[in-house]
Amino acid sequence: MSEKQPIQFYMRDDGIMVFEFHAMDRKSADLFVKIVMGGADNVPDKLRLLYDFSQSPPPTPYFTKIQGKLYNDFPHPPDEKSAYVTSPINNSVWVRILRSQIRAKDTMRTFETQEDAIAWLLE
Image (cartoon, rainbow, N blue to C red):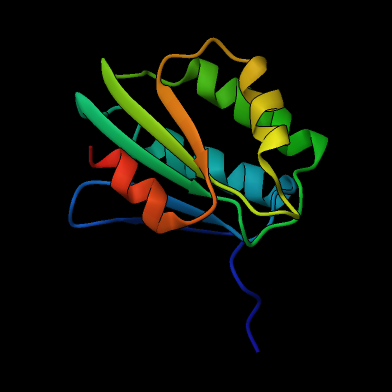
């Protein structure tokens, strides 16, 4: 039996990039950095991102540190929206804490379902 990957990344037909996190630990953080930095030279002018944390336990301090640094170092386009899907286990409080540690370069909101997040990203 194979172990589930800590992150699933895919691009939807409507252009939304989706990151589904199943863990937010060191392995996830390091994989997230590889995925994001692999596309850093090819950032579109309009970027729509969906981060689904609803199936993951809360982040480790390492994950939070890496995500904040990665966000601050990443080239942000002029039209960027980020949607965060959370759950009662992994609620929006930590998202607000993380976002308070960065220099915001996008518009963001938290949601309880991917469907609601996608609808907002497509507005």
